[in-house]
Length: 185
Image 1 (cartoon, one colour):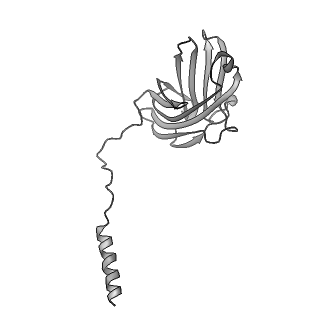
Image 2 (spheres, helix red, strand yellow):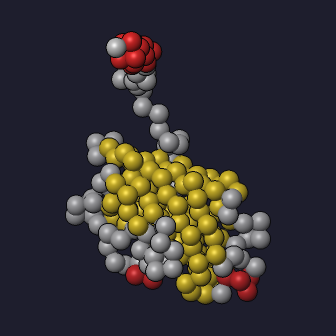
C-alpha cells in the first residue's frame, strides 16, 4: 500500500511540475523571411543576395509566378538567375527538368550567362531526374497585396552551352534560399 501511495504522489508531483510551452502571442506582427523584393541564398556555400523582379505567369488565372535577377560579374559577363512557374498556392513543389522551360506550372530554376546580351555562353538548370531534393516552398501568398514568400534549395547542372570553357561553373548548389517578392501583373 505504501508503494502505491508513493507512486501516486510521485506521479502527481511530476504532473504538477510540468509546464506548458508559451504560446505565440497573436498580437505579435508577422515577421517575413526576408526583406520585400529580395532573394537570398547560399550559392555553393557563399552568401548571395540580389533584387529580383516577380511577375505572374499563366496570366488567365494568375496561378503561378516567376522571378529573375540580372547581375554583371567582374569579368563583364551577364548572369541571369531565374525561378519560374512557381504556384502561388501555399505548399512544397519540386523543380522540374528545365529544358521543358515552356511547360506551364512546373517549377523551374536556372542560371544563364552571356556577353553583351547576345552571345550565349551557357546555362545550368534544375534537373529533377538528376537531383531528387530540388524543391521550392511557398510559405505565404497575399492575393490582395500581390506578395509571396518562400524558401528553396536546388542543385543546377549544365544543360546547354559550355560554361566550363569560359571559367564558369558547370554545377551550382543554391541552398538556404529565401524570397519575398511583390508580383507585378
